[in-house]
Image (tube, rainbow, N blue to C red; front, top):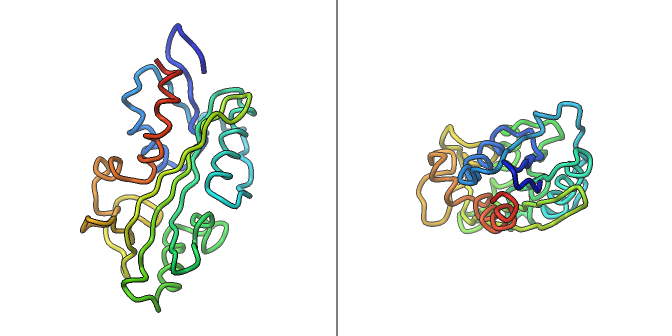
Length: 205
């Protein structure tokens, strides 16, 4: 990643177009950063996400990509946590309804599990862990959270994942109703990225 003669290269270790768009929107103010994604490495196979926490999975993905591709890498693992459900879906958020489940299927399962919950028990939070790694190994891992509640019905057509169900505290719209620019200022991913930006800027400046 160290390159004093021009842009430095960082790969976002993801193929999720929604996550990639959020990352790029937040990192756009670093002009000396040349951002790639796993779409640029079609022969690369990411590791299985076997971690028991968001931090473990983010670290696994970033370190594996950095070592395999011989390039600095950043990766995240994130999801929704419902305390009243014992922390579900948690690290299984993306595959809550099965390994190949759609976002809609995951939301449907979560709504079904929450049918019996009163409003006070519908509190939830998004959690995001972001790891930065070089080919030699992990450099830093940080975490951001965003607290709110889950509705009984979906609202909004933007965003992805559980966004149509989630309303941040002190807001009236779901993440899927907010514009990208607003969400990118207040999201769990933004909070985590803010904590790791200094580490990225130290190389991309």
